[in-house]
Length: 303
Ligand code: NCD
Image 1 (cartoon, helix red, strand yellow):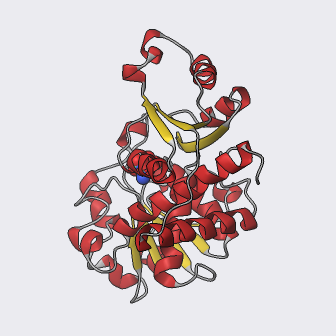
Image 2 (cartoon, rainbow, N blue to C red):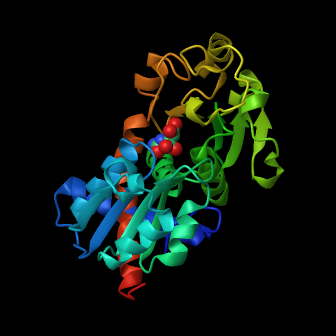
Image 3 (cartoon, rainbow, N blue to C red):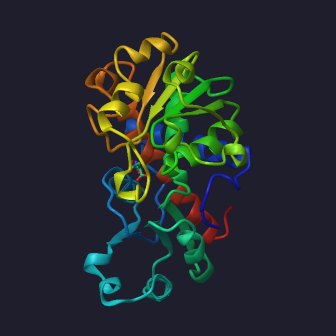
């Protein structure tokens, strides 16, 4: 039970999520009835969110689940209740599945220790964001036909990115080659624990890339990090009409959002036919349907 990270998943489990997500996408886009699931899901979000929240809510609605949203500002967390007590309270309040986003790495794992139902990690600090990686994988497979053998350059603020870490595990388990590209100060200090190559030069980083995934500079997590000048960063690492020429001709441009236009991406990279950014958002709904349905199958003992 629970989807806490990609690192501990088997390739076959990732494949099952993708297969199920494609079934949901086919049903939703052809107007076929979607098999309904009964139960209650709660989104417990300690950090801001637009697309992850909206797509989990959409996924829950399409599956027929009852959903609720809890955030610190409007809950008893504001009154000093601990995360542990909050999670136990939600369990007794009849929540079957908890989707949690938290600034501390490992918070969803802690929640899973005290929560009886399923727990889904919707992003924990700089650690992992498993459903984003599944959405990105489905997007690459849908646009490129396969992910096996592709070179994926993930560019930007890697050190603070849970999306980069989940994608590194997910894409390499599925047979891709992953390259982290960015200034030294924004690359993790020890990448030897991750299945990636690293590069602090954009031209080398983008050479032969089939997919370029740009990341936002996460200034909210940058205490003590020296970013240097923003103008210099943009000049050296922006993905734009010019720098895309360094990658393969049919390169796919991705970004988990939110975008800081004019910094990590220019309008051409974000909006041209190379871009798969809207596909990532839409596929996020279908992988989250697959993930939630799987949690409920396991709860009911069907999986
Ligand atoms: C990202 C996140 O929250 O990790 N966004 C997302 O969930 N789609 C990336 C970011 O905040 O830059």
